[in-house]
Length: 290
Length: 228
Image 1 (cartoon, rainbow over the protein chains, first blue to last red):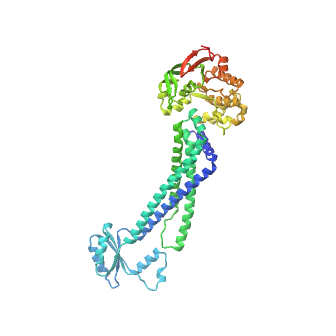
Image 2: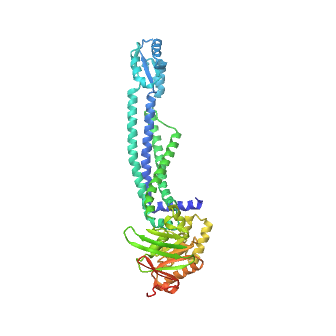
């Protein structure tokens, strides 16, 4: 397409958007709000996943030893089980240090006595055998308690599943709403310019030439809305991250500028797709009538 | 240039607009299609630019069978003809020059060529001095001349005029038809549907009279009504 034609079509797009400024702003804000909610849902899922991963490395069992247990004897019993791949001895001092690191607290300085028992971290060859192996380990003399993060992890996984579904359902509703809003706005333009469309066709414009300004108008709403959403979500996320760091410092959060680059690009791509698709639907009826 | 072979047209509501019509129009001709309202004049023209498709028969424009043309070639067909309407169909939010340039925008013409062609077309209809006016600032006759300039700007070999004087006073109507005649002298085929008897009689051109969707009279240098 020639540069001049593109210029002409862009000008037509702008003229279309200016024809009903309030609807154009409403469309943009609506796209922005919908995409922002979707982005918040996605970020929440990412963070819950992160918490789940943090709670338990897959296929690992924590074996807490009694105070008088013989760690070597326990270890040799553990390794005798062929389902066990490795076993790592974590003495109580190391356990305290690791916990302090996880919660970003100077525990060693705060506590007068180390309450953490000696521990063995057992990794299995096949994680799905974790429940059986845990039961078996529980019976080894010297073992106080053998646990895997089943309860906590199951809860987090369940929460994540619910969150995913909520995001999908809310997302579908919002996408449908956004679609309708952009469609109505573009339809206003299409209706206002139906004579133009007719004349375009009569002087030999292809259907694609007729469609382009309307599709660009939809894309304009979509991309502006996506930019608004990206900005708002980014600001809100930084604020939440800062709050969590100050008040719930043990909670790990997904962060990094790469995340926001990906999120912004994804939002803009989604905005583009929403805008273009809903405009195409709006214009199609008029092209058929012609 | 144009051939209708045993063409019939029935609209979805059952109205039969054209009945087994045969008509040939040669290159460079000036033809009046006449007849009272509802005899199928507009339908005859609409089939040429594929606004409507014949129910049966064949419509050929410059060697192309219009009805059998694939959809993607319809724009190419339309670029070979200019269409003038009774209600002008100018774009109210564009200036005179932008209205005329509209055809060229669609074709992706370069800016320099666009400016030159718009000037030539507006000079031909004697409205170059109003290039920057808005359509609403012009009289009916001037608006129709802009419509003609828009139809001509791409130098199409065929010009179709559907009641171009329908909304104009007698003297302006005559000016418009004189303009079309001048355009025809430059080699453009002109087909004009009208029920303006005074104009048809004064021009002494080929007259094709329709009644009930079929040709009832075809005279080389005719008048609107020969009394038969």
